[in-house]
Length: 157
Image (tube, rainbow, N blue to C red; front, top):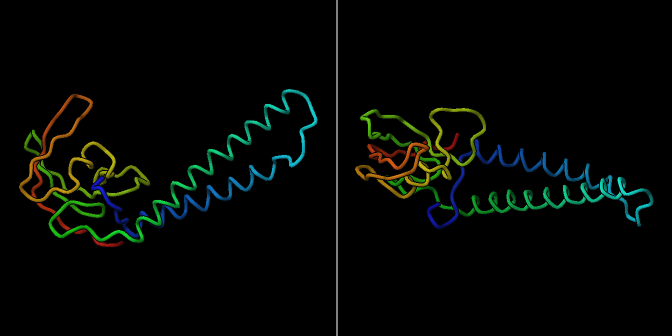
């Protein structure tokens, strides 16, 4: 993104915490099915046990990732005024001349045509830029440009 910890909007932080709680509950549920002793049973039982252990490891990695992102957000500075960052609202003029008011967000919870995630091609291109800057990004149809018309802080929701 911009090289340092990125701030999160209040909505995105709530969504990450909710996801984290759900992942922890799922992890606890799967971990409770693992045996503490040597498995007794056939190869299918062993394979099932290995799959559950793999699921716990996958959940642990995702939990660590979300924990880190939440910790990072707590020490991140708010976006600099006039510069696109996570949480900024931005008006963009596309190559075809059309304009759109967008929100640069961290987490896409639902389909929202005005939300651009910071890790999308357009979102990454916008980060760190200000009004008047031209950014380039890739689309499924190839490379294109857009101009940052204005930047504002969407504020915490």
